[in-house]
Image (cartoon, rainbow, N blue to C red; front, side, top):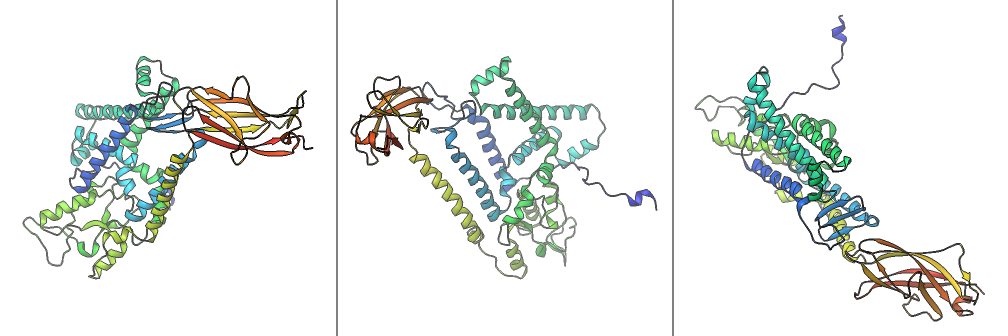
Length: 482
């Protein structure tokens, strides 16, 4: 035997370029609308202004990594409140499970960034090079003046889109108008230029060349989706019982004896951005974008056949239809135990985050006792405890706070004095939007019950002067224990 007969096939097949054909229909229209809305939100959001006061940024959505804060319109998230971000990420994961369980890979087909930017790049490619057949001819064409001109035009537009994408990304992390000026005059931080370059290059490569390869090889979701779907999940499928046996129609014919509705026109295959034939059954590559439905419905209209040869259906319904029965209503596929459970968990986390957001205290502080020593006895017999208070001013202006101490029930404590280091009264002013470290002394009068006791539970209160906002933390006063 020759060595060729023993050679193994390559691990990865060489990529065959895919040139989706232009199609019109309900699903294509919906994808255009969603693409325009999502791209609009992405590019415009960093430029929306939101007044927060002189000491805070006026960008509506800002990931302020330098100061470790996140601003979203009227909401400000501090580092110690990262559980809000964690909760949103959990909701995103559960939402993905919910939508996949109910209607297959609708996220992949309509809202995934890879899908959205690939659609935009294909739109540019079609505008420059023509529809499917023209692009295939250009691929096979020798490198002449026409091919060079069209390729350079297309790549230039792709690069501009990638540059706008990378530029918009960095604007989410600092003030957008200021950074734009710095980028243009060459004074922006090096990391900003590097981020724009990397984001531009990845957008150009992923949307222009990798396309479906990112979905097939790089994304884990096609392999996870099987666990999220069952026989009640709505997904795109070909009604084989109605379409087979397929066969060509001659001009002027509308039907052929013994032939199914599928006329083997390959329209569903020609419009598929993943390059698959839905008539071969469920496939890992399918992103359920619905373009094959539009193409097939258009062809059915032309030959006078009922629509729906390819459509959204559940595996259970396909078997029922094949037997001549009536499938379940769509809402019964959506509202079933699995999806209700996912929705309940998703909504529960969302409600909990909203409640936590509105119940969080406008004043944030903590009080840490000094453990070495536990107490100090001064020359006149006064027993002093020392504490370190960290007070975070969440307001956009300098704010004065009053500090008091009570027993656990909120009553004043006799023979106990609170002193703020460096302050003449029990009030202090915290700079706008900063955290203030303040030394606090609690002093019990000589020979008082508090001074002679071992440990006494207390509550320290901080209230904003001129506002009802207040907060408290529990602590202890260490006495001599006699």
